View (cartoon, rainbow, N blue to C red):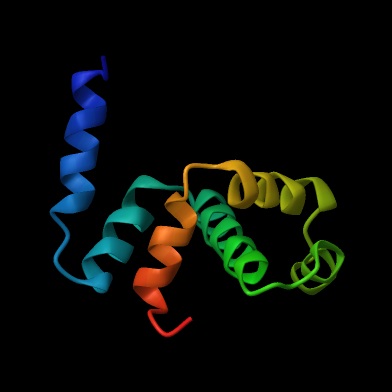
Length: 93
């Protein structure tokens, strides 16, 4: 069973009404480095879903191949969460 505080956090993020509010909340909760890391992970996932090779992603973003591979594993073998949200943001793809 999930901890009550995790459920509260889910409600907190679900309560944002605009992208600006979501950004405001993320920037308040995360350190600047954490915020950048989360954004980088999402960029990696998008590039993977668009068919970019892992080494190209590594070179373009300046991240380790292990970081890209971790994202690739989730894209290939995960629950489909990344794909679901990618297609919400990019419905024509």
